[in-house]
Length: 278
Image 1 (tube, rainbow, N blue to C red):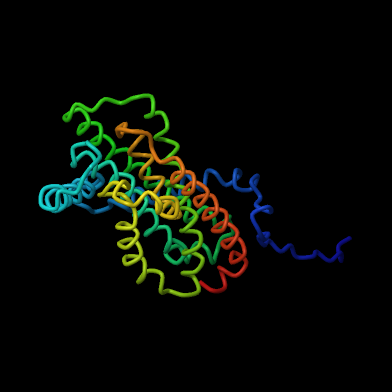
Image 2 (cartoon, rainbow, N blue to C red):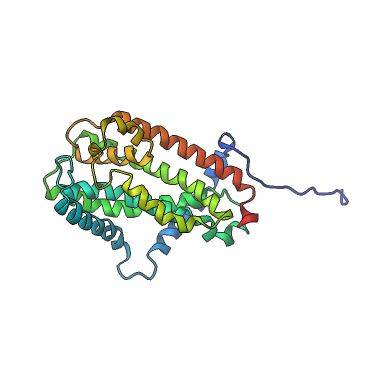
């Protein structure tokens, strides 16, 4: 018995969406909470205004777009005061773009942890996206204040707002899984992300209504997953006159599912070699 050979145990991830060990992810939930809390603390460490930046960023962008697009260019806003219209889109977009930017480079940022300790690597970009919910909640307070100031009441559709926030999280996670795994091998991601998010902003009805897009083009326009998400979120909060374009939103929801599933599959395929490549 003393000379019995002990065989080494190799821990490695499975491939594919169907082989995700959900039980393992649940077992590491405490680590996920620790990573989220760490991201929140690091975000505003040694900043003068702290969490106030969560409001100042979308507020500043709203004021700029209100002046140039609302006042000078007279961009329509579906009968809603333009400041409220723009802020409702920017509120969700700021959450999405920030989560995408930070989560896409999160694996390289956490290089020391990833190369020394085993844990499900999906938790790293996921924690960054989930940490952004605090900023969203803070900025949402100003959204409520704007609605009260302009006399806009909520209807039953506000109950669907969390659904569209969840869809925005799914897009951010899906794209971040793609880009974070790609960033480990090719560090071009951090240089292309600012350009990508800027183009994506103007390809999404954040500061202009989707009604400006020709009707025949809207289902194709919905292939941008954030189109239906932003449009649906604005409708759920503000009750934009007329029914939302369910065809466009439906196409976007399907695209969200494909982006998320594809991101998870690609991340799991690359997870075997992340520690070696990073």
